[in-house]
Length: 158
Image (cartoon, rainbow, N blue to C red; front, top):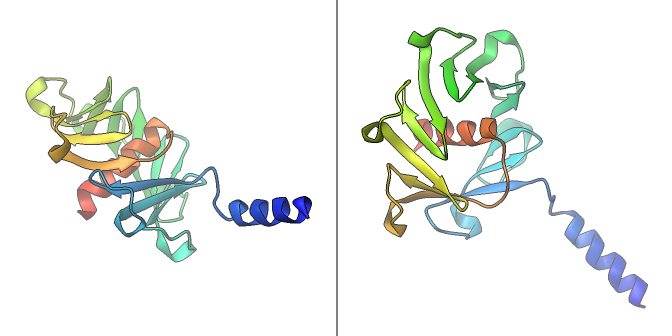
């Protein structure tokens, strides 16, 4: 009987993938407030993991449109703490830069150009650490590339 209960619980829990990271609106942890789901280097809309709901794919320091991984579908390239448009490596194509948990506008690292900062799974507006300034909450570990993909998706979608 114990084995049967164990197998049933294991089967139920296996439906919830450990490699799935969810992004919630503000400080929330409610399923109804999920903005994105990150699974297998793909960022999905809301709680979906359907092919049709792939917002972008993260691969080899690049962010691709939807499920594509062709060079013509590169939206952003991430190199040495900088985010470039498409496949570019020119300084004039730097959209964002990041370091020490902060996202900066363009190639800047000035305090006045901080767009957001990341602490303890929460992304705050600007340099703030007030609860009212939490833009979204990430419920698991992610790569820098995934963090940037979430930020860009959040910034352009919301």
